[in-house]
Amino acid sequence: MTEQIIKPNLTQRPRRQRLLEFDFARGFAILFVVFIHWEPPESPLWWHHAVSYIHTFIMPLFLAVSGFVYMHTRGTKGYGAFLVGKVKRLLVPYFFTSLIVITLKLLMQGEAYVENPVTPLTYLEMFYLPAAGYYLWFVWALWWMFMIIPFFKTPKMRLVLLAVSFVAAYLPVTAPDVFCLEMTRRMTVFFVLGTVLYDHRSSVGFSSSRPDGRQLPVPACIATVLFILSSVLYFTVLPQAEYTNPYFAIYAVPALCGFFVPHATSRFGRTMLQISAASYIIYLFHTTFLGFAKSLVLPWIDGRTFPLVDGHAQVLSFLAATAVTLTVGATAPFLLYRYVLARFRVTRFMFGLK
Image (tube, rainbow, N blue to C red; front, side):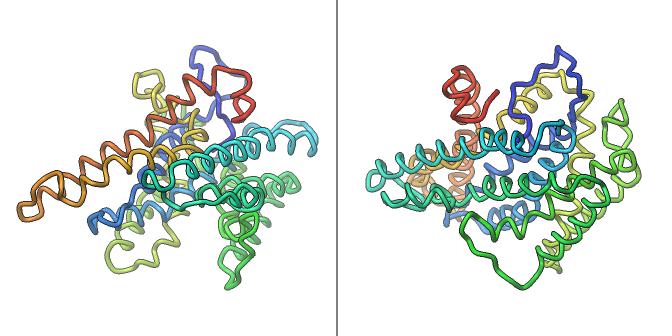
């Protein structure tokens, strides 16, 4: 999610071919991330089920996309220069975002709805925990993955790392929460799987190797069918299918997004690619704007705004609150990225933008 945080320019042909199917996958994925962070206690049961289902695969998909794009964009720079670049693109935005979010929470606590309240001590905790918001575990985990992956230079070595990270992910052990080591243990397998998919990209057949973007290769068809089957089982008789959902989704979703590649220059395509380019900023700030929206719309859900008639008005009020909240959570950070953060040199540095 953090590899190409730039404004897409479809009029210039870059030296390295763009992975448009992964750009689309990242664009859709960040919208689903906003979706899953709207789950008030008053939500209908079907909404809780939908959020739980999306949780099974959305962050593994993000990590796999990051691994695939890392392989595609890696250069010849040394390890030290590579890490310096990741500090600028990952950790510097993380710390500035944490400062902003913690400060806003301190100012608003007691005046408005604040999820996960903070204290002045949180300013110190952010240096070793995702203290501003638990969702920021993703930044720490991705940092450790980028520290490790350059040492595995060949496809065979990455296959070994995939096997090791798979075993580590399901061992009955728990790593310390400090620096998000526990989430790193559980999630590294998906990032590495993305690098392995890149190593075998000619076999799996993403749209970069099928220019018309129309014909879905047989392996992707199989992965898509298995993903659908696993999802059906998750909702019906086998909740343990949550463990298979991410592996099928990591392959199926980008492959299916290949169908959008021929439409990359349409209004819809350009919008999704712009959302993809802003995905890291949206990720960093979406919960903050969701919090603002929640403060305004939560009264709609409890029936005080609309009289209840057999519960139908309550459902309508929930859907109205959901539409407003999700729109704010996705649109506000995108506009912040496009019209503020990407325009000034200081904000580009603060938030890792080129």
